[in-house]
Structures are given as C-alpha cells and as structure tokens.
Amino acid sequence: MSERIDRRFERLAAERRPGLVTFVMAGDPDAETSLAILKALPAAGADLIELGMPFTDPMADGPAIQAAGLRALRAGQTLRATLTMVAAFRNENADTPIILMGYFNPIYSYGVEPFLRDAEAAGVDGLIVVDLPPEEDDELCLPAMRAGLAFIRLATPTTDDARLPAVLANTSGFVYYVSITGVTGSATPDPAAVGKAVARIKRHTGLPVAVGFGVRDAASAAAIGSAADGVVVGSALVEAVRGSLAEGKATPATVVSVGNLVETLARACASVGARPVA
Image 1 (cartoon, helix red, strand yellow):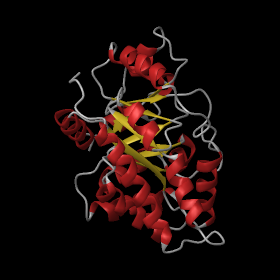
Image 2: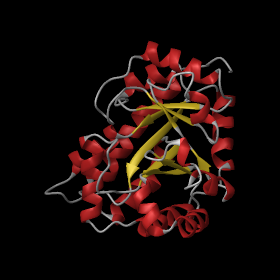
Image 3: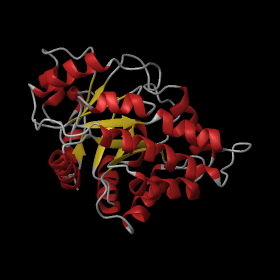
Image 4: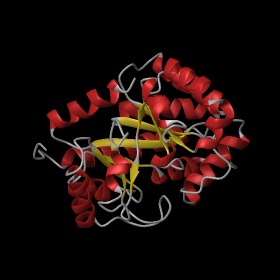
C-alpha cells in the first residue's frame, strides 16, 4: 500500500519538518523482542520504518547491521516470519509505513509472485532491494509496483546526471540518497555535500528524498534533516540493540534503549524547525 508512504510525506511537508526513518533488523535479537521494538518505534517518534530482511551475505552493510542479521538468522528468523511480524504490527498500527529492506536472494527463494502477494497482504508498503539495478526492473521492481508496493531506489554520490534518470525511472515512494561511499555506518556524512546532492536529485524528480548511511546521533540527524525530506538511521539503532544484550540475549533494557534513542533522534528532526516548502 504505497499510498501510506505518500500520505506520510505529505503530512511531513505540511508540518515542514524532515521525517525520521528508522531501520531495525527483523528478528534481532529474537522474534518476540524484535516485534516489541517494531511496535514501540512509532510512539517513540519514527515516521517511517525500514525493516531489514536478514541475509547471509549483506554486501552493502557495515559490521553493525551484518551482526544484527546474523543474530536474527541464528534466532531462526525467516522471510516468512518477517512478513508475519509485519502483519502483527498492522493489527495495532494502520498508519505507519513499513518498507522491507534487503537483498533479492531471499525474495527469489521465496518466489517473487508469492512474496509480493504475501507482503501486500501483511501490510508492507514498499521495498528497498539494494542489489537489483534498474536494468533488472522486470525481476521485481515492475511486479512490485503492479502489486501496489513502492519500489524505492538508492542514489549515491557516484550517481551522476547521466545515470540518475535510469535510477529514477521506476522509483516510487521516495528516493534513498546514500550520503557516503562505502557500507552502512562507516563514515559521517558532510551536510553541505548532502544538501547539494539532494538539490540535484530534486531537479530530476518530485519524489521526497531521504538520506541515510552514517547518521548516528541527534547532531547529525538535525544537520542532515535541514536538507532532506527524511533522515534514515539504522546502524545506531542496531548498535543500541547489541549494547543492551546480555550474552547475546535480550534484556529488559533492549526495547527501552532503542526507544530512547529514537525519541532523541525524533526531537532532533523536529528541532530543524520550519523548512521552506519544496
């Protein structure tokens, strides 16, 4: 239901503030705790949620998200279980967009058509599949859009003006701008450079632009939020999970620690203040 994403960004634009997009790994550190974290995110201030699909070879992810995926896989998380988690979330929350983020292999193994059918039924709003370039749109992008799911594409600092139209051709929901070269959580983005990149992307599309990779605290969230329609935070949240564990297991602090960090990040995004309407 990609309309949920559109409505959320329309609301954010009316409020003239950047949205907080939170990434957590499905099944980390276990299914029950992961669902509790997922349910706690909107109340803590998350505007949109990216839910990671655990995979054994996450080539675009840094050590923190790789470790989160491995914890989830060791706990028995599967793609089917991830869809069940989304459905459980939807029983209590009909408004917050959920985007599944990950790699094509688990979807291919599940079967593209069954996956899209089950994802739509569970209440998934969109997909970010980092290893499918525009040249492979027939594999998943176009079928996903026909099924009513947004297909969100990544643009990077190396995506030049010649390449950008191909990247944007079948993108929907929003554009995810990767603020650094490298893997997730590996560096701190330069807000000035990000602002220029977002402006360049917006010359090619009317879609909102969310910025991620390297946003880890309130200061960086506010700095990036001054230029972007959305601020994506992932590695810092999965590190909050890891830091709360005892011998690899969830503790009473696990859900609380993630919620507290999200509250801090949400306040930072709100502190950006009135932004010029694009």
